[in-house]
Amino acid sequence: MAAKLEKILLIGSTGTIGYHILQAFLPKVASFKRVAIFTSQNTVDTKKDLIDQVKAAGAEVLVGDLGNEAQIKETFSGFDTIISALGRGALHLQPELISIAASLTPPKRFFPSEYGTDIRYDPVTSPHEIPHQNKLKVRAHIEALAREGKITYTYIVTGPFADTFFLSRIPAFPVGLNMGNSTYGIVGPEDPAQQKKISGTTYSDTARYVLSAVQAPPETTKNATLRVQSFTATPAELQKGFENVLGKPLKTIYTPLDTVRKVEKEKQEAKEPAAVVYTLNRIWYEGGSDFSRKPVALYLDEKTGEDVEDPEKSKDLFKDVPKRSLEEVIKEIIL
Image (cartoon, rainbow, N blue to C red; front, side, top):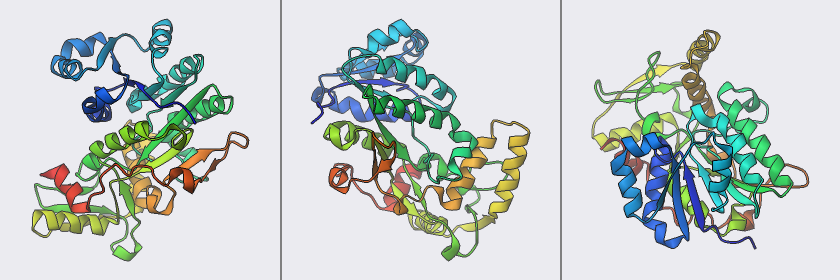
């Protein structure tokens, strides 16, 4: 049985998802031997209230530079668990951070920044999706090291973040709720029976699942891919949930998937950064984040390199994370 995870270092803990993970850990600081965040001097200078909150909770604030190898190595040596919440623009830093962690003994547990979508949702198409490339490189790197026994990992894989997915934010076509004109944008067929299910996860639930995975018996999350969700529903079911919460009907605006694919291709050919938004929405509405069809947990077979199920090992995972109705999730986001 692997040793309990007791010394926790959070990286990227003042960003969007990192902030929520940090907020989940702060009330639990006393249950660990050590909890710390690693951040920049600029963050310390500009986010004084947050830094004061971290210190008041009994967690440590370690200031440094992710590009300083010697500093990172010294910092990592004091922890058994490193949780990365680096944003998409900093994912390329993770392989080097993982290499540093793998150079230390005893082996560290590393939680890469996996949040946002399932980058292995389909064995044929997923490896070619542009937004997946950095994360796939991270996975290949850490899994090779894990097979050598130099590191262990846990992936917390979410669906689209409900906090942003629910709200219309895409210029080319409406997606989700538009409070201003009481509309709801759906990508895909108008027939609800033909719509694909989407599994989404709130920021707060993502944080709860990360905390739960750290507190679980280490063998149940070792070298594991863990898919987590706040809801699974078709777009029509999501719209109905909003109508129930708001107490009024919403006008539906449909956008064919082919339209999304066309705009996505145009954005990619123009090398616009916004192309990633269209790619991810296309994946989600094609059914690429329907976790109801997939196991909650898969474990690395160190001999074959394949991911395999182990129902006995995973049966008690996340029992401490409250399950909520779709309406409760919606209320958290919009009310």
